[in-house]
Image (cartoon, rainbow, N blue to C red; front, side, top):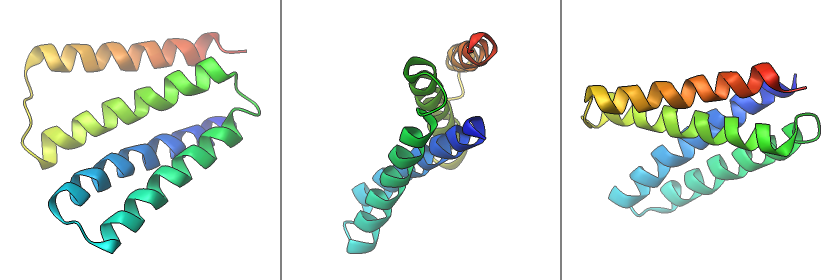
Length: 105
């Protein structure tokens, strides 16, 4: 259950990054509330996760989900570079997160 909670925390982290981009383009109250809501849910779920999963593993996986997810969304929605080197380093982050999951107790 904690790992599912961590995945949702990472998903809200991605949505927070997207809402940050939206706020940059549209400085409305709706954008501000969306930004605060997404990041608040992300932190709340992360803190719940840390009751079961060690802090180092949970934080590393959470940031990995946020980093990889935001980068991939940027590539597909905002036309950011899909250079092979960028994809290589994204895959390294994913492999590291999986490795942490495998060795977590």
